[in-house]
Amino acid sequence: MAEQKDPKMSKKDLEYFESLLLEKRREIVAAQVGSSSSGAFHTQKHQMDMVGYSNHLTADAASDYTSLETSFDLAAREGKYLIYLEEALQRIKQETFGVCKVCKKLIPKARLEAVPTATKCVNCKEETKRKEREDHRIEMARAFAEQHRMQQK
Image 1: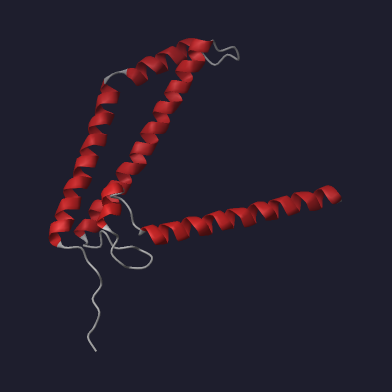
Image 2: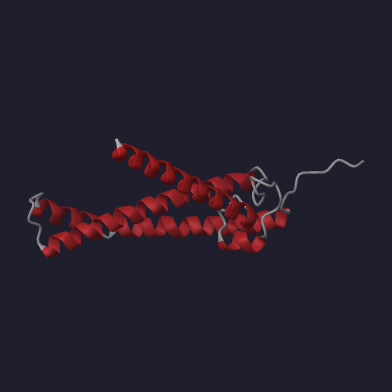
């Protein structure tokens, strides 16, 4: 009986996805450099410092604060995505890119083009999400039952 080899993407496909990942990384880094050099953060921070932390924020100050918070959220999300991109590039070097970490089958190229940082095929990702939702429902039911039990005492 022949020994079954682990699935691997072809060198050509790995090179294609490496260039795709590198381009996505360049876009994010360029956007971050552009936004930090624009001075938007410093302007917003200065405006917030001028307002102070009084309980009576003006509408403009509240809007500025919301904008600053959104900027921080976006930067955090982009930072997290950069980590995912770096991990995907590492998998390319290890020649494990494109292999589902659950079922160990090749992830379809169409999925990787849509989500190049994917580590699971669609079926395994959906199953993982289904289990997470079920676990969340069970936890909520436990919390509800506990709350109900405490109210009965």
